[in-house]
Length: 293
Image (cartoon, rainbow, N blue to C red; front, side):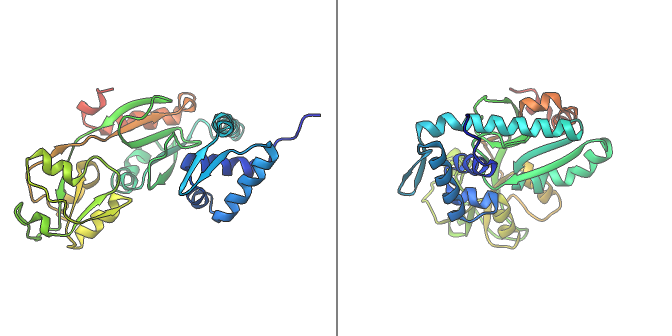
């Protein structure tokens, strides 16, 4: 007799832990405790008869078995998603969109009423992460990712690029000479950073203290309250400057190493609503960005 499949919950826990390479982050995604995640992984490993993770100090790695099993589990979940959508009739009109939190709040959300007015037949479900996932989010038909160019595991195209620059609250007094004496904020783990901006204009940079956050939203909120300066770019702060809530005290801008990319899953090609949203998204971007690949 064939051995029955392991519980679906164990497989979902394994996929989340493998995606984050962290039991703690997987627990947050799944609204579970870290110990519950660890117990389910141990149960799955016992069921399979071999370990899926190497548990090193502060580092979690997939074993060879884990590397082999992960794409199988992910494809199974994708098949379930597609099948469920087909049965419920949601495949045509419901579109899961994945993007980072700042882009969702500062760029996408203000434009959603326009999209809904133009395409009332399409139901968007918007999911956000603080950090961009390593691979396309499970179940997402469309993803907007801010990063260096992602690996071409799915259809990928350049959506928007631009320059980054410092901003502060109106009336906040700062000069290039005094800049490094002020509180500075930045989003962590990006190449679009203070040192790069300073180097691009040959500014002597003494590596002053910088407060790092996991999302631009925290940086922007801090400086709008008069807390100092942070780096940003037009896609997430252009409207705040137009509304007079922020100013760019210096003229110099530096090209961002990162850019916004549009990722389409295989199921998007079979989902008219996803293609409608992708075309609308391209139309919102400057022509120079939409023509690049």
